[in-house]
Image (cartoon, rainbow, N blue to C red; front, side, top):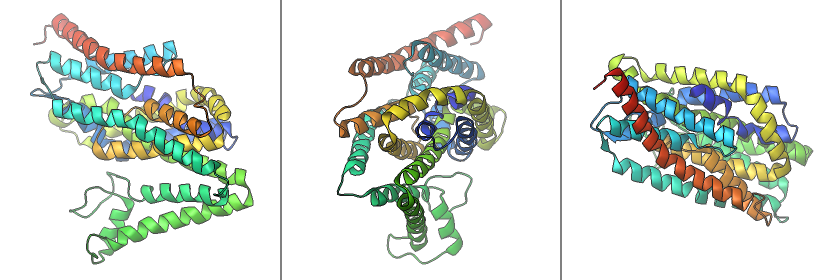
Length: 383
């Protein structure tokens, strides 16, 4: 499952940079593997916990149930590849694990379902509107690109300073581990009311550095600045993709590794990160070549507009522990960016069929997961 995610879900973020000839396909595949694996290792814990423990109540996911769930989810992804309509791995895995959990005799976790459903419904709205606003700013003649491009880079850098990184130390009262939080712990400066001076300083400092660096490149050449930003955005989105997607592969194994084998969570995440790395290096080049042609038609500025919400929403999902579909985010961003140019640039029929396919995936994966585990347990005589 991790191999499949590395080969597919984490590849598209670098496609715009390839389409703009800012980076070669093989170099992009290499970076995708490294960055997605690092994201999986440092950010995957919260999603893995949700998928493995929070989707069903009253029972523990057994190794056989985990097997049935992963096979079901992988089967749906294969169907999506064969039909040409991308199946959201988050929907397929969530549905499959709910199905096997119900087959085990567990209770539905309605509070979790409401939280996931609300977030999923908000994704196309937030992604589309953010992409629309970004694209409008990039197209506005009143805002020169020597300002617009660096401003986007500065905003992304400020968020990077505060993203959750499970391997970093942080103050006991901190809600998340981050670069800014670690610096605050080391400096230990007095607080100014609700403001942590060290956190603010690191956040502003990284934003300023990014602004200055991208502005200089943009002043030298607009295209050079845009391509640099595309590579930077592709990097942070691929990193975020690893953190948000690995839990779909490792979540079903949470109970096995922690409760039955007594192994720390980092071991399971390392296993998932290794699978994502292998999948990216072995399977990503072909997908990158295919998707880069689509992004080349989309254009560099609309590609930037589509990637910005991808990074923001992926990090929000990681922080909240919500499995999320990158297909949902990116497609919504492409549509939003297209509307800023007067046309979505995407077939309305394909949008409708894709949305229908996603709903069918979520519902039928529950049924299939239930049936597959029941068949396995009956055939093996497992109670």
